[in-house]
Image: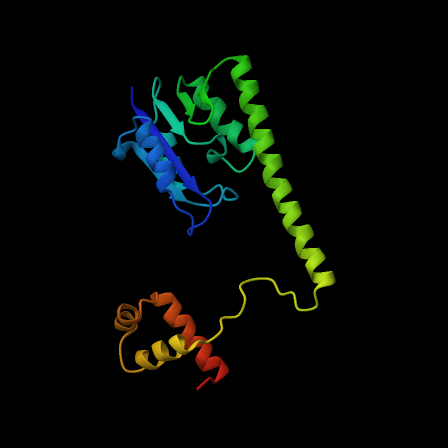
Length: 192
């Protein structure tokens, strides 16, 4: 009887620390926590697949939220129901233990449907906002705004001409990727 934990965030910029701390507080040992940074829109989640292969009857899987299992209700149920049928206990930190009963399964379906609807509404509102901005703001552009080359960035660029990117990063406190972007932008725009 082993207790496993699964944590997932949707982008590489998001942090897993809060979920990991919550799983540890629930008594999951560090070596039994499977975590990854994959969007819920992809079904390719290698660590989750590894967890599913490892789990056995009478084991427990703990997640912080029900929507960590999958991107939509159908996929989550394709994972949760077979686990329950195998005698695996599923515990959701903000919900409790999901019982393998008709009422427990109904609660899971309902909550997953609500989570999916919330995600869909966020996407819909985002698209509506973009559409409105495109129609009403002639200067609207999607994506990250163009970086303004500040005097600090110019000095970092000049330093990087005679030093490695890593040395420049250490000296300026800028990340390596930021320095590379600054170098590209200055070269493309011919800024002196």
